[in-house]
Length: 340
Ligand code: KG4
Ligand code: ZN
Image (cartoon, rainbow, N blue to C red; front, side, top):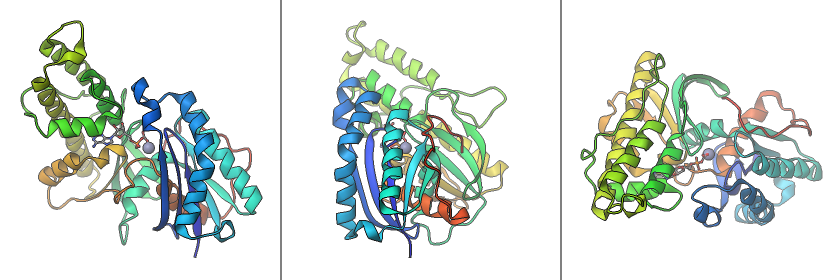
């Protein structure tokens, strides 16, 4: 029996969770900074770091309390070491190192993107590889072939914005608050997804790569066109906003589904693991349910594990440690970028 404490501070959530043997979640505490960053329309890195400093200890204590465990019960610490905001990651990483020394237990750094994929495996009884992994988050968009845990082959990635980032930017053009994904989803339910013919980008010679910067510009023109005051895009007629939101969502989901299916066909994989903040969208799940062939099995993160969280870090950390059973060195550095 191994109790792993997972720490996540790569962006704007301070999260600590305790997971038993890589699967059983005993606590999953998240302090969200959404309110802090909302007036900036996105994450303000310096504020995020300072808030992690303030929140980490109370979140850690709450996590132990909810799991009814004492520090002496914890066997391993897992921490997100990359990718993300360097200042924010450093705070979680230093905390992990300090706890490892103070409690006399090992610690391992894990890749945050890999953890998003692992989240989708946490509710699955028996995970079978090879499979296809699709990460759709605020900072990353990837299609990978998963040969085994820790062994990934990148098939496609974004050449500009991540999908969640595109949702956030389009929401901002529509005058909606940050984070934009849930706001667009709500509005899109009321709109006509075929009113505007938006299209996500194609990347020459890389059919599985993504590009979302062009569609953002198309939305900007649609907003301007629908605007009552041409100099103030936030004044889009309310009626048009919902159609723009629905048409944007339809276009990007069509793109993601098409490229995922293409990759699944090419790699002969009929098992999909989807992770990252955008998989919180019910509309995305409904879209995949409607259009994926029945032969393809798709798994999403269980409730509460789509957005950044410590449980996916602890769960993956368990497997990372099992490989070599060695603690990471104390000079391990936070990395803003790290491929899978
Ligand atoms: O995975 P995540 O917590 O952050 C990163 O690791 O980057 O994802 C956050 C992203 C935000 O961009 C947010 O707008 C998006 O996930 N998101 C959604 C929805 N809920 C969150 N996007 C579309 N529809 C949603 N319902
Ligand atoms: Zn994330």
